[in-house]
Length: 355
Ligand code: GLY
Image: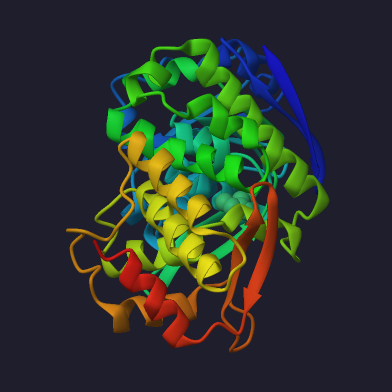
């Protein structure tokens, strides 16, 4: 249906397709061995894979942030070793962002890097995690602290996976779509404004359009700055505070929900510096709330704890040296950076998203 080219470490295509299995077949059947890595929760609904000259290894792993661990990676490495995986074999990651992150990291580290294909099954995975080659796992000290840049050879996005997603997970994925609207493509904000979550979900062509637009934003950014020397940081809009919320709440909420609050937080931070006006801050709240996404810390367990949030922000990998650095908006589609932000400034923005 649509193909978006990415040129980052290698050239590859993100294909928005109605037939991911059909598209996977010619890629997989060229390899001697293929490991299909997927969340154990998908075991009963996964189709069978059979290619005439290819040995298929099925590797279920735990889903969710807890599965993005060194234990999961060790399990994958052990299975690849037992099956005799070589440099010319392939990993196929089928799942949400946590599964594609972990499987992609296994691909990046096995024999110093083998090919992998991403088949994202969640909206967050389709518009963010599966595209761009960031792979990794969590450390007890923070999210995504261990990882590698390792582009897939292909990304196969089939929106029919989304039919099984809960409204909560769909909305969490929309947070990353909205992020692309604020940092790059204002039309995304127009397309979702004044629409309910179910109106969006029920409109297949709108969903495919939102996916294509978000992937186009991401492809454009990662093709210019694969290793995040600067431009790619804009994809982390709202993520510094979002990651801190995830960590202090022990991942009690979805990544996209945390990013939703994080975007309001960073909009408040920018408004306090007169970079944007309060109307744009309220536009964040209005669009995100309209889709049922949280815009304040409210009742999130463990999150109303400034010292813990501040410690988590300080550890965030986007901080350089001892300087805390945030991606902010100057206007929709125009990002800047706020550096050397003080704890006082941060706490003041925190107080505006408390309730
Ligand atoms: N999720 C942000 C990035 O891929 O850079």
